Length: 499
Figure (cartoon, rainbow, N blue to C red):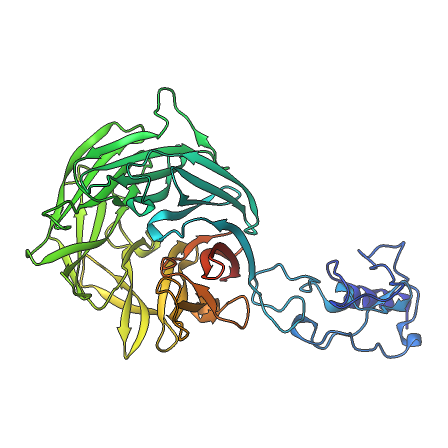
């Protein structure tokens, strides 16, 4: 074989990125990885034919299938590295590319981590998340008179926690508080609201944060943050959204004070410093006196207006109507209200599919739970102000209910959920739940990404999944697991691939 031809063979067989060795314990005296090809380490003059037929590599799955040992420094690699396995090989898999890069038989594996121990378990109104420059912020109300802002990096490794004092009206009941992390024109912000102990008052506040989750205090601002509203109605604010330009906050809450029982929905619009743009006013009233409003959500539109969504139910029932109203920048109704019939406990949420879906009123959609042939499904209602469309996003495992989260990413709508059933062992009604974690993966296929073979122990307040987009096709989700004996609640994070 000529030197020129041999040099081409060495380059073709030995090319690739740096990699590690076997996943098991290494040899007692391992040879160093040959590293990048250069004249000092590769023997281009060795005739590979004189070395005999190269043996197969140790790993034979994934990108390693069919790999044989490369020639390095005049000899075949004693232990295969990326020189033999190729450029797609990784000793420890980090890429979200639809390949089994470390050749262990698992493609794009999820990674789980424990973020924090929690105090009183937060329901979905007392925890929220937002994407920031280098990761995710999560805000948790799990103890009295303070909110904890937890910072995680893009690998969902906890980096620290900031405790911020807040002004709540009923310190004896954290269920009187609701919160939402928002992205404003001045950076991330914490919106929170609380109701009075007698069901006779509601106050909403806004705290600006920096990208690390620390409070940004403005001159003259009260300790509890900018006061957005202070109203003699008896429910915590249940929803908040930012205007398209990020300069104003739209907040909405039910009037659940004595004698009304949630038959009116109120809202207000303010500047970030609390200056009133639109004074609190009634946005929606029940269509019949035996109905109540539940499950309020709001969203800012790209045309400067807003959407408000509420579920109307007959008292004691679980089926009813979803009512959707388009509001202008002054919170005045635009056009006719839209209604959609829904089945048992839909847990409906507004999402904006973005400009790719069309104009400001073409892109909003509603994600909700639905009963389909005895199974629970996640569905998407689209074209809300046109003829309306319905598509199934995912179907849960039989006899189980999805506690879900949804997020719109650069690749479209993503969803993840806990597929939940009652624990047959019984126990306290708050702890008698168990489930597994599922998410949409490649091609929109539902995939079980649970951390092990056992079902995850859950609390009834864990009916939420905080979901955020991460770089390089990764998604990040936060969920809560709980045990009754000993009583403990843990915020868990899972990073998974959604190419």
